Image 1: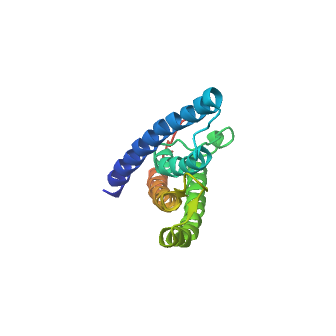
Image 2: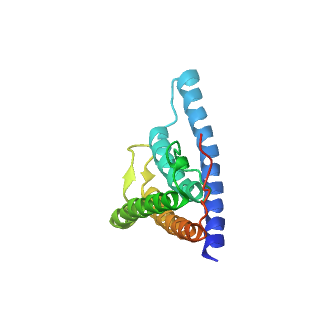
Image 3: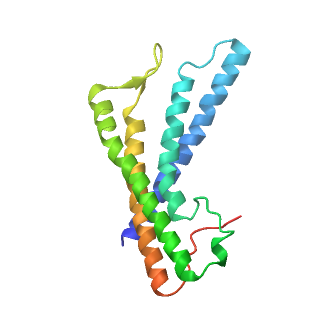
Length: 171
């Protein structure tokens, strides 16, 4: 039940991140055309791009984890027994939980401050509010930690059946 809900949420966030990246490409093109053709760049482009990249990355993190899109190298582990591979998979999930849990915990105050104080980036014509960026980091890291918990449970279940959980492709 949790897995299906998280899968749906991860796909919705992926669509949102893709839409944001698509719209961001128009901002960059407008900035380049304005800079080259009219010697007048689009104001606030650096702030919009830097904020949007952070949002895009954190919105896509959950989908990358659940779909097996995180990078893994199995040159050595492919030759190990199933139980050891499962133990390493569980250990990597625990590290993922710890990493994203720490990011989540550390982002709570930052989001609260940005939302309450109206924190922004940029000066002059365009001031980009920072609370959406901080919210994306908070939500993305929290859901990523949950995704690693789910993946760890799947690893444990596969280890009990003496199977290897395939989480993605290796190159």
